[in-house]
Image 1: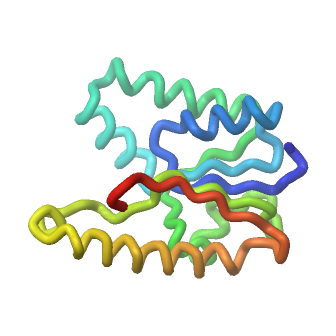
Image 2: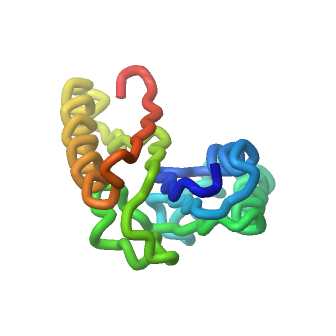
Length: 151
């Protein structure tokens, strides 16, 4: 519901945030974040899928904002307390829900050669993220995590 103070971390195209807004009936008490800074996000995606394909990403961000959600870039889920002023615009003391969309480390060439290092690094990252969330989550709060096989 819109009364639940909810943070979505690790967005890319903001389609997940858009679907959550539709399910909740609006974006009140919802903060949607991306790890990338805005220009980095735009440059990376446009170089990957082209300017035409990127328009859908922009439409999703606009939809989220129009429905009352806060959309913020450059937010590291593993360090939420260090950038809280950027994502916690409403000065919410504790969150009811944190949703994580496929959080993972960047897969560098070493990870391709040694897949166990990719899993090790992702395990370390998840520990950092969960520790970070623990500082902002209400006592009875929930964490919802989406992962993919091999992550």
